[in-house]
Image 1 (tube, helix red, strand yellow):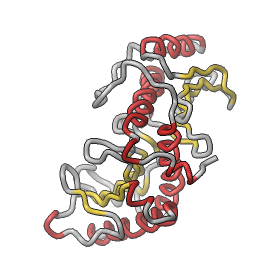
Image 2 (image 1 turned 60 degrees about the vertical axis):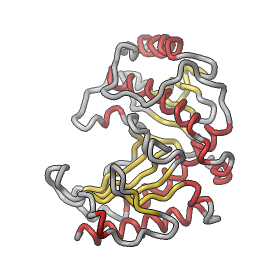
Image 3 (image 1 turned 30 degrees about the vertical axis):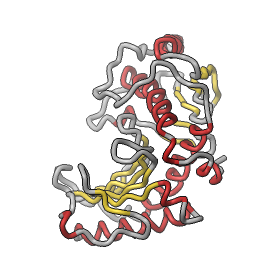
Image 4 (image 1 turned 90 degrees about the horizontal axis):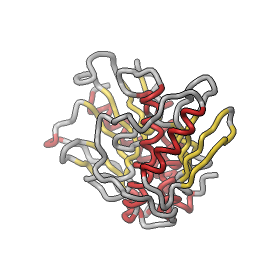
Length: 276
């Protein structure tokens, strides 16, 4: 079950190694989906759900048996599940991707599915590991940030269902590893139609720690941005978004309540700025 105190288990600015391990491990779930599920234009067949009580990334069911991969982030273990039960598991600490790939392929072929190792992703990770480290506290803290967001994001998405097409399901994307919903405010070409992206990044080249974001689209004029909500800031290098870092959120004393306020205020500002 999600324990808010795990957010403070590690300094959020020190979660890069945990993020890298979980991100790389999650590619096995995505590659399995790419090998075995019918592709869709937005690549959503490869994205991941989240179990906030157990801290697990969840793939989509595959094949007649409904084989479903889960990555237990705190223990860094891959679980092969059918009918809600774990049929096989592998702890990744100390292993390399070649060994893991052989194990994953074995479970897939046991269920009449195509192997994952021949699949090449249409993107490359910024960094890759030669070998996974034993599980550490950073993974538990990282899972807590995803669980916090998995509770906050559906709530704010629900307030925006009056728009058409409206919010997409809250999912984690294997490329940038962000958990997000895209709220489409109108139909049309995604390059020009108004929308708001709302989500969690576990950290990236812009910020070395997890951060929450609200991104109005099309990008607002950098020269005339409204004041960002309390403790958040406008990020304007590469993308224009209101950003609340994990460090600033922890400083509020009640991260869950402040996150809800941030999402509410940042979304209201976005709607006003986009004229929606």
